[in-house]
Image (cartoon, rainbow, N blue to C red; front, side):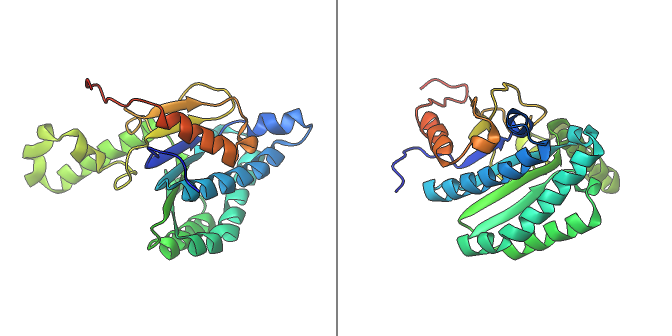
Length: 240
């Protein structure tokens, strides 16, 4: 039963601590990533239960491509396996699945599976689950600017409006077009930074930093985060 008031529309999570979780247990880093998938499942279920409409997860940054190739390959394989396993759950529970990021860097097989999952779940309305994969905030803003510049070059008649573009109009060129900005951003494992995540979209997000490592962040931790959010006073720079 949902006893929470003032539930955020969009909760976003920077999933951090998989490696430390594994190291503390004398395991390979991959074990932490595998256990982290269970936290994704638990938080997705909690989001549905408590009426959150959008849940987004920072799964793999542009900078993460610099990790050892063996770990990158394992993460991509895990992403592929997880999507294959969860598609039926998405369909059964009305979850729309979306992947955003610099997808040109992903392999053809993974991209094909992403497209298939997105197409099959496109009509679902209970929850939109957004996975940020090969994403960074600076990249997103830069690709938006390039997209806008390319549009002006291809349609010179639009050049008169170049200097009058506003924040709302520019936001349509970001990969998150159509998705509301996050009301709350959670980062696990005790780290207190954005790490190049949703730099434009997080302008007025509420932040919550949890000491819990991601593989241990489950329904109770998610509920506690929602409860903390419900006590926040969001003024957006204004006076109430």
